[in-house]
Length: 300
Image (cartoon, rainbow, N blue to C red; front, side):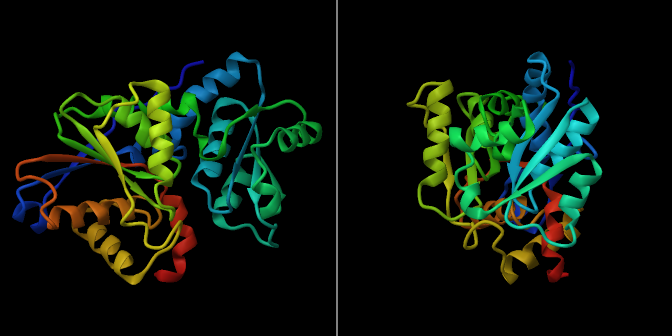
């Protein structure tokens, strides 16, 4: 089984802020790598799909919330690569599907709703066994697609960058994408992850764990910035909304409010504070997730 990942465009951002502070800023447009399985979801799923096929599995089962980018991507990947898909969805079923779940359903995913209390036990052997009793055999993909094979895929992200750079930035939900990126860096390069959920040292600990598993635990060319989560996962205020809208109009690069918008907001704040030395080259990884903006339609 072969999964092609296309060459990713690198777009330079030239505006008043980058020019004033003499910073070269580029966006790696992973959001353009696939029409339906876009962004980091394609690279995280890549080796999981290959492994599922190697094991002879015909069904993928995974987890997510009602607006999960991962659920949408897993459904599309299953349809494209010949797998049945089951999505274990956190929370109750509503009479009408939202756009994310409607998309997943239209791509053949069976949606299985569980209470929030039950969802918190999703990684326990007892809960997984109950799912196997209900659905039969399946290949398990963790929430967000984050596992060792996802890290392997994410290590390939920097191979699409045709320039030398000093710093690479990524939004952090589970830490897997950022960890894979960090593991691919050269000695003079460093990574900054932007935590999009609330929890002191939570993602820094997760990234440290991934890095220690695959590399020298003393690696210090990265850190997770916790200053721009705006109160937690999917939390948005007017300042972030205005920044995202301005950035999109100025640069013709769409952002989502949950991940890439918070990352880019953080990058600009760091540039304006003088955190980066003049002349530095920064790459911001656009991890996709634009379908999740459906959950913020009330802002428009």
